[in-house]
Image (tube, rainbow, N blue to C red; front, side, top):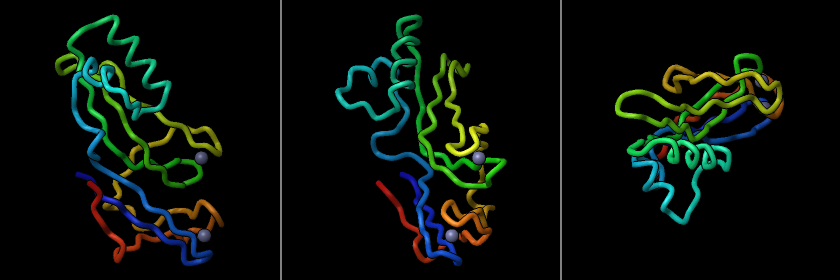
Length: 138
Ligand SMILES: [Zn+2]
Ligand SMILES: [Zn+2]
């Protein structure tokens, strides 16, 4: 189960919600089980990488969940499905994401401490957490 965190801009009224946690299709499983499914829930590049890893090694596990990231340059927020591949306890692969505007590597952010961010539309520092809209997703 995950949480949806809603943000709203006081300046232009733009609102967006960000997911964090584990949705119903995004959970810990064997890489080989994931590859047997008909539905592709990850980005095609991630999918191709998982295929390659599974050919090299058996018994790999993957964990995936929504995480909230922030661009250290633009201070804009993103929610992305982070995929981690494990061989026992060792991390074999971990997703990395880049900002669509400046291409800087995104940093994981702690949504609980993040009260303000930059609005992706008007670029003002008036993008606030909207506590009234806090909800759960399956
Ligand atoms: Zn705005
Ligand atoms: Zn950026």
